[in-house]
Image (cartoon, one colour):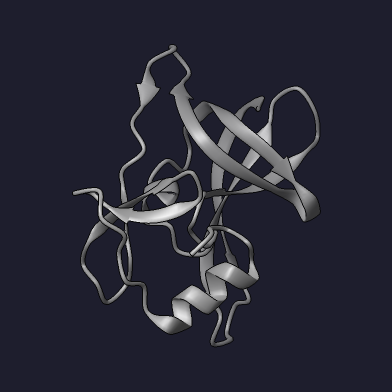
Amino acid sequence: METIRGKITVDVIDDGSKSQGEVAFINCDDSKNRYAIYRAGMLPQNDAFLCSLAGTTVVLHGNIEEKGYFCVEAITSENGEEIPIPAMTLPGLGKSIFIDNGTAKEECGKKTRIPRKLKKLLKKQKKIKL
């Protein structure tokens, strides 16, 4: 696991296209590196939680991946307080889930049914094992 510190910004990508969306980035303090950040099992686009942190300086704990992405596992504020990462909600299901050893599970601990289109996308991006 790696740790990076920096300020979170939000940019619009693919402006004017069907895939237009907002992506949160972290601009590292100690280098000129900039990473698109995302939570495990979620796409980087339109993550309301990460986008809500825009303008704040944080310490991110996670993994640097290919092509300038950073998978966030934990977030600490500038003054050292941990920022809780909420459970994600799958579109169309309205259920909160979490990732347990790479498997999507509902809060009650049972496996959840994920819509086929989202399942294919997550498998293709190798975000979670279903």
